[in-house]
Length: 187
Ligand code: IMP
Ligand code: MG
Image 1 (cartoon, protein in one colour):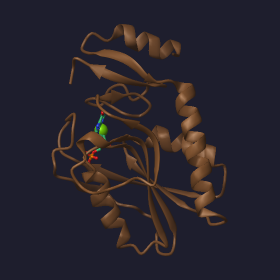
Image 2 (cartoon, helix red, strand yellow):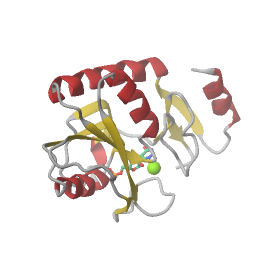
Image 3 (tube, rainbow, N blue to C red):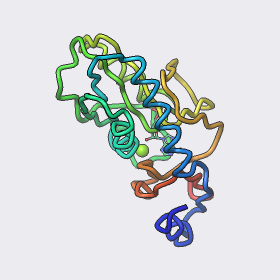
Image 4 (cartoon, rainbow, N blue to C red):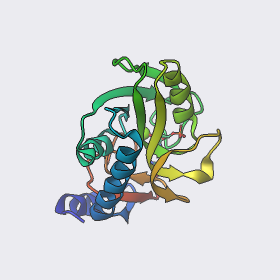
């Protein structure tokens, strides 16, 4: 645990942060996800589409682990309110700006939970006629899946728990933590 994370852990009274994935574990998983993506796209220059805000830290590490010519874009999805889980309504509030036609697109998500966000986005982006369209999720929470969607690349599979850190928030907090924690008691 970094000093910054240790400080945050001891400073929080609202909930208890329990270490789940360390910086080193995350680094290893990101490296192997990058290797798998690189092998699949071959010589092509992929477009990585990060889902704001939760994926921004993961995407930043993933593109550097990929270490190959690529382009980056972002979408922003609102699932209404500062809530611990998707409300079931998903709206795209910021669309991609690059032309995805004939591109190899990898959607990068922090957490695949109900699957609603990913389903809506994948269907939306498919209309841009990419050559390929894949989904990369840092954490796959399969337990609460409500719509049929499978990630092509998964960093971690999580059975239960609400997590924060490494870009992932609870009510916009904890994104700065270098590792990933289970937030207990506040959710
Ligand atoms: P879903 O797959 O549409 O249900 O939504 C996934 C999104 O819900 C993620 O991108 C997160 O923003 C949020 N989310 C789901 N589970 C968690 C969690 O454990 N911690 C923080 N955010 C979460
Ligand atoms: Mg969120």
